[in-house]
Length: 100
Image (cartoon, rainbow, N blue to C red; front, side):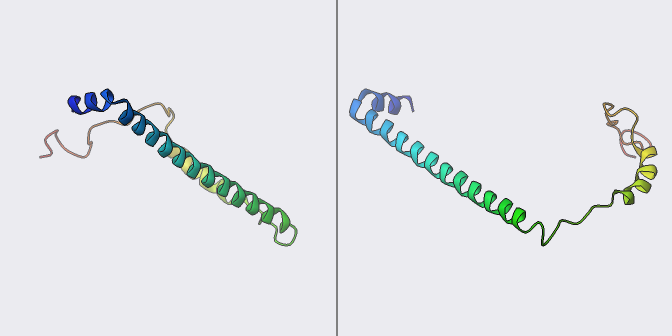
């Protein structure tokens, strides 16, 4: 592999051609990314404009958070006191470490 690299680098014309090819490939990739970003920006602006325009005719529904109050009281005892504590690595359901 080193011989191939040495031969390529020893010929200035071949090196120049490979550098130009790499630059063209990089330009093509960046051009495609810019087109994709521009397309996403236009679609996003159109969506938010659509939502803003139809907000009066079709308002977003109100969200009732009172439904989750009962869940909070039920789940709170199950949550750990210390969130930095790691779970144990052993299986407590097995009688010994070998699983027998």
